[in-house]
Image (cartoon, rainbow, N blue to C red):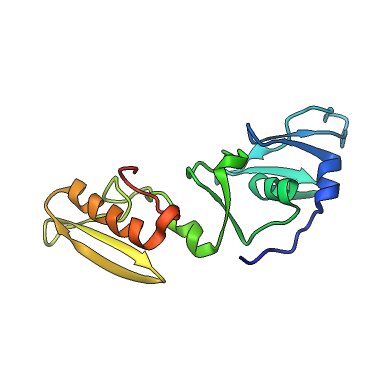
Length: 171
């Protein structure tokens, strides 16, 4: 799996911050400003829902810092297994390729369906199930019932995405 060049070393990170792998929280080990105390929680949630932390005058995403803190390296992508962007517990993070990270995405806001991989086809009056694999859209079928379309998506997602599949109905 491809790794990114790190903008901060594990040694520097561990000197400045502490990371609790059970909670996913970072705390300050060094005062960096008058308002910043040792032991203060580090970071805030950005507009995209990710925790970001300022270290050395640069903003870093906390899930990337967690990987550097724990392993000394940073993979191409870091996937939040449960899809919750501010859940940076070590057990919830895993290395991923860009493609694998996309497999675990959630249903888009404004979608015609509450399910991932399902959309309403107005002209046919049916629910369509589709999946994207290797950059290509695959049609899985047309269904009268939205739940049936979602189940068809889940079956295909398990087959193509394995452990990275984000399922509509869980296991």
